[in-house]
Length: 495
Image 1 (tube, rainbow, N blue to C red):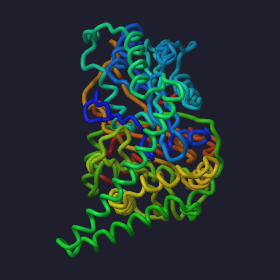
Image 2 (cartoon, rainbow, N blue to C red):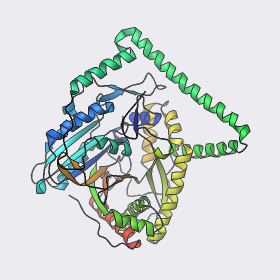
Image 3 (cartoon, rainbow, N blue to C red):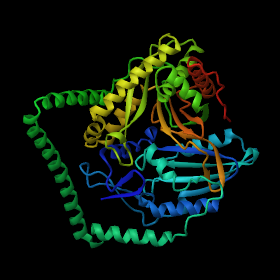
Image 4 (tube, rainbow, N blue to C red):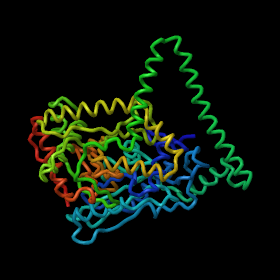
């Protein structure tokens, strides 16, 4: 059973193996997979209007009023069920910064909010309207657990409360209490939970049926594959190639020593603490520079981050041979339509001395190989399916050992190309807080209204001087722009 109340996104009733793995891993707060975004506005958003829009979104999207219901043992993934005690006030908050209301205060606030784990008995999201920002500005902060949505799905969710005009008409009033009550009654009727022992038996039978159907589906796919071998003699060879790619991807994901070579000797510490900043680059010059260098804006993005990391180490007299980084590969173009259609991909990029143009080419080539492996190997689902059979302590232990060797993570999303508004306030810029999840820092970009806005989410136990890291990354992007024939200053929207 699925819901599809958001354009291009389906909400499955049961978690995928990958989503279930993210859910289990979060039991170790060090590996928190949640993401967030802060939008700085020209004035404070109207809190009453915003609450009304979120209430309407909760009615439109059942996932926003659902909590996680554990599965019946490790073979059955968790599923989503309505929260009978849903309280909108818990999820929509309104705060004011103390004077003077600097950007540094705002960024520190959202960094602290990101550190707090979700209440696992409630829906996994909340929004905060922030007043008191200097110069009469305001802000909006949103935090979602990654099991609810990846970056693409989160942007589609945002369409329900963002508008293209300042004075957009409000949505119709909704009876949220009635909708919640009816959804609870409907869910109980469908599952038989209200029937005591009989209901428990029915639930167990349902789980057994689902497991049988999964195994039967796998068997049917295997049989169908064999039948096709006679019609296409090359098909077994292609299957073998795909299998080898999958095995290699699995090996790189589960091998605890993978990625141990190279990496930063300065960024070894890890903690739950976070520091946040925003870096902004003009979108068109960055795209033009990427094209001149023979690649995409995503290649320019990752190259700028790599150059920033190298600048940081050069200033400290610490040469590097390689950096261990990760980036996100979207799988929506290959059939993924769920709330999480992506594959995190780890690569090792060379860090020795070379001109910016050669560095750009090396990053582009490395990422292309990693992207191809992620899309053809199909390993993440395989790894997650196996990992979910293991004890949680073992899973989190392996995850810690892997991420401890990762220098930083990156992600890149396409936002609105025109100005947008949130409850009467125009959004000036955004900053995305991607999951650090045991790395030294996460740099997540989202284009918006002619700007390439990046959120720098740092573990200060790993990076001793967070402010200098920001300055070094700014310098890295100026290097990319200059190498592509674009001499443009990087905006500094910092606290």
